[in-house]
Structure formats: structure tokens, C-alpha cells
View (spheres, rainbow over the protein chains, first blue to last red):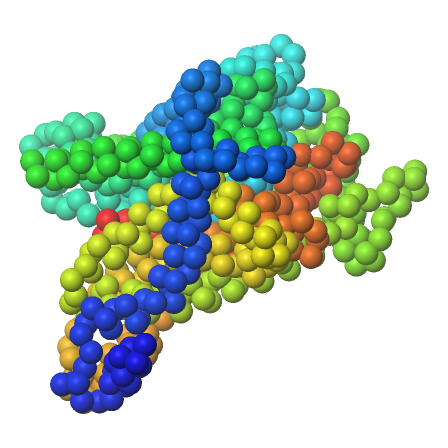
Length: 308
Length: 296
């Protein structure tokens, strides 16, 4: 403690020769931030791991050590595999929709034409809307009796009678995917747009002189050079999509039946409704491990791509 | 060549129109719905334009907020609980978002400085581990945090929420700011060190004053991130003294006993602060989002 005080003191003095080592200086500088992260992330994470190995239900007084029994229970439960499958279907579809639409949208906003600045600014509207409010918005658009989607689809001749989109399958999960993508496309578009702007214009001009069509230029110049950006977008979008919760809470509550019960929702139900904190923690650990695994796989993929 | 140009513009504007309909249409529809009367709103076939334009849908929320009591209409309908507490919850969200932006920028700047400027072992490990923190699912942290908060009597408390939001926001701020600090010429710092400034003085007198745009960007992103936070707000808050706007908006969206017009008005009101904020500060936001992208 005394050494620490002396070091801090010598950092205040002007003579560089008495300066404290840079590593320690770095620690002093980042201490408040690291302290907050430790208290709000590391300590809870450690306790969550501890909980996941205990039988811990608020309804019971005893909380014995349970070894891997929570995990065993989860892994042998069909409900877990169902929600895992739902999470994957949701994440894969949402990420596919987001990446493809964002790519084309970014190509559009990369063109030089009057009005694109306004479009770029408007793109921030869906991005800025909180998830909960996004859910409220889509709930209104999809209302079974008065929703504008029903009106539009009926006018277009796609449906005869109004449909309760969110309480029937497969429309419920499809609309959840659409609502989720709608809000998350803008950020992905901006990231891809930034990637596009790092591609030298001369490459396209040279290819154009050689007679390459716009389609071919996109395929053979833009896409390969955009690979690192697209990988980053894929990593982030996948990780976020696997954690989806807010939207499910407001839009479907995991229903109809269990149709939109993703892992996030099932952790919430197990923990805060059934008050089974042990199982809930174990489920959360599994979700964390899946996320970590996916991040590592994508990262390796990106790394290999860069070395080539 | 000229005709080619014309087709190009026609295609570009057709694509732009489609973009506007898909991405701005739903938002416009929500606002337009909120200007209708309840009886138009629940009419089939759909009433496309509000006629007359009416702000009646907002009445319940504003009446409740100002008189702190149930609004009772002529036909005996009394306003809902969420309508009464809604505007108060905006104040809570504002307090949280402003505090989080302030503290995350201050603490984030001091944490980002050594990563950007000092040479020490474990520099990249530090940056990397700060980012990995973001990989931990919020739900995994939620369980212990809720238990701790209850045990320490810190549930239903804005300070708790400010702390928790910092843990999501800090990694972003640090990442953003270290990238920004790297763009400041080292010569300035070297000159100051020659003049006898120590590292703290360099950070306070050179780096931070020169990084105002970067700090503003970090603050704005922090504001928006914490304004929209829902999961922890849902779990930590218990009464209207700490309910945030997202929690009350979710109450509206999942309740069956509230007028449709009021739910929609609630949605519009919840959208106004973040969207206005985003549009006003769009230059900062764009540069912030993009600087992170190019570097990673």
C-alpha cells in the first residue's frame, strides 16, 4: 500500500527518471474501469458458475452441491434441445437476412447520388429505437384484428381473412426474425458501408475499362475484399442473435406453445419464474460456452482468411 | 451514355424508395396511428390517414403525469397505472443514461489512454479481455446480480442500474477511445513530456482536450445503449421510483386492459428521445460506429 502511494506520488512529480513503470501506471489509469468490470462481470460470473453446480431453488431452504447434475438434467431434457434448435433457427435466419440485406443496402448507399446522405441519416431511426419499443411497434403492425400488415396483405390478395400472426406457426417465428432483422440491419449496413469505402475506387475503374460488368465487379472485387468486414459482422450478429430476449418478452413470450422459446427466454423462465437458480445458471453457462465457441470458430476463419 | 445515366438514377431512386418504405414506413405508421382517434384505430377496413388529426391518444399519459391520479373519461373509463407513471419513468431513464455516459467516458478515457499510448506487457491482453467481457451473456450475470442486489438491499435502485449499465458500456467506450487517442500525433505528447509533464498531466492537458469529438461520440453511444436497456431494468426495478421507460413500455405492450391509442402513444413517446438524439448527433454516431469497424 505504501509502495503504491509512493509510486502515485512519484507519478505526480515532474522528473521523468523517477517515473513509475508503465505497466503499473497503466493499472493506476485503468483502475476505476477495471474495478467496475470486476464487480459487475467477474464476480457475478464466478458466482454464476458456482450456482450452476448447486441445487439452488428459492423455494427450498437447502442448497446442496450438485456436481454436474444440473447440466445432466438440462442435457437429457428434450425442452433444452427444442429451445437450442429454436435459438439456432432464429440466429441463422436472422443473421442470413441481416447480412444479405445489409450488403445490398450498403452497395446502394455507397453509390454517389443526391439524397443518399439523407438515407444514411434515416437509417439511424430503426437503430436508435430500443428493443422493447421495436417489439411494441411490430406488435401493433401485426395486430390480429387491426394490424396494418393484415390490411396490406389482404389488399395484395395474399390472405383472405385476417391472421393472428404471432399466435400461429410458422408465422410467429418468421415475424420475430423480421422484426429483429429490421432493427439490426442499419448497424450492419453502416459497418459494411465503412468496409466498402476502404476498397480503392481505382480497382473498379480498371475492371470497368477491361469490360467487367457491375455484377462481375461486385462478385470478384467487392466481395473478396469485403471478407474481413463481413466476418466481423457475422460474428457480432450471431453472438447478439443468440442472446435475443427483449423482443421475445414483448412479442410472443416464447409462444405459441414453445414455438419461439429461445435459450434466453428459457433461462429467464427457469430462473425468475420457476426460481430454479441452479438450472438457470447452468443454462446460462451453456449459452455462454456456445457463444464463446462460435466466436473462436469465426475468429479462426477470419485469421486464416487474412493469412491467405 | 446519357440514357444509361438516366436508367441508373431511376434504379437508384426505386431502390431508395423501397428502402424508405421498409425501414421508415413502420415508424411513420406508428406515429400516424397515434394521431388517430381510438374508434378509427380499431376500424376495419383500416383508416389510412388520421382525419381529424388528434392528440387525444396522448391525453391519458399526460393527464396521469400532471395530476398524478386517474383520468376518468365521460364513459367512466379510468386511466391505467402505467399511463400515470410513464412520464416519470422517462426521468429515471434520463438519469441513468446521463450518469452512465458521464462516468463511462471519464473512466473509459483513463483506461483507454495507457492502451493507446503506453508500452507495457499485457497491453493487448488487457484490451482483449475487456472486449471478451462483452461475450458473457447478460442473462448469466443477471442471476447473481439480482441475488446480490436483493441481499444488499440495492434492488429497486437507480444507482444499481447505473453500475450494471457501465459494465455493458465501458468496453465499447474503451475500444472507441483508444482508437481515437491513437490518431493524436505523438509529437504533441513528446513535447509536453520534454517540458516536464508527467503522464497524468499529458492525459489531462493534451490527450483529453484534443479528443472532445471522440469523447462526445463515446458519450452519445453510451446514452443510447443505456437508454434502451431492458433486461436488468426489468429484474432490478420494483416500483415507480426506479421503473425505466423501457420497463413501462413493456408493461404497455403486454397489457390487455389499456386503450390501443394509449399503447401507441406510449410507443411514440418512447421512440422520440433516442431517435431525436440519434438524428441530432448523427455525425458523431456515424464516426463512432465506423471507427470501431475499420480498426477491428
